[in-house]
Length: 184
Image 1: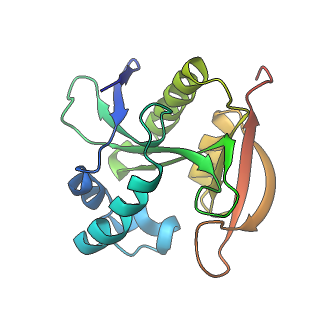
Image 2: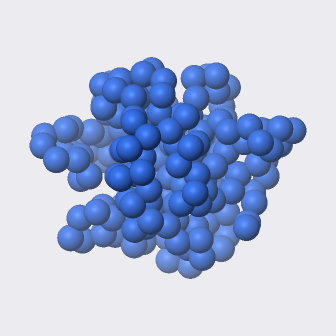
Image 3: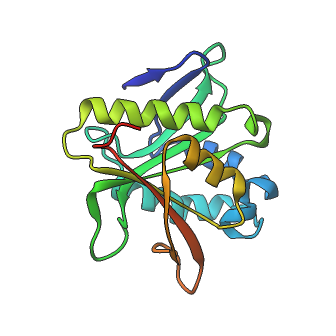
């Protein structure tokens, strides 16, 4: 399996057998605050919802999936993940040249630049190995200023406020995007 490395981090695609790591991460209400209001995820939800959803878009050849992030000096550590999949994947019109990037990390990593460092490494890897990526895009709750700050550090610009494309009901998010053809 392909591994990426930064100065501090080791990054590799998760598998469908990593449900225990997803469960572990989602047990902190602060981590889940801007995902669902702070409700922790049950093991059953991981098994019945999260893993089947991941199975629909995981594609190692294209770099789609959840990229597991660990400390380089402690490879068995699990800090969080970076999401990569086509934007609007679970709609009738996914955008295969616009990759959605997202992240979820343990509180112990917050404010240390780990999400930005790992997201940047994954983006650079995909641009070096894939031909048709025109944009990287990210969405977040407009009150999630930490995630919005990461988007800005990745060179993304505010595009618009929209209804979350992946959630039933009216859940507004902000969309940020980066054109990969421009030098930023």
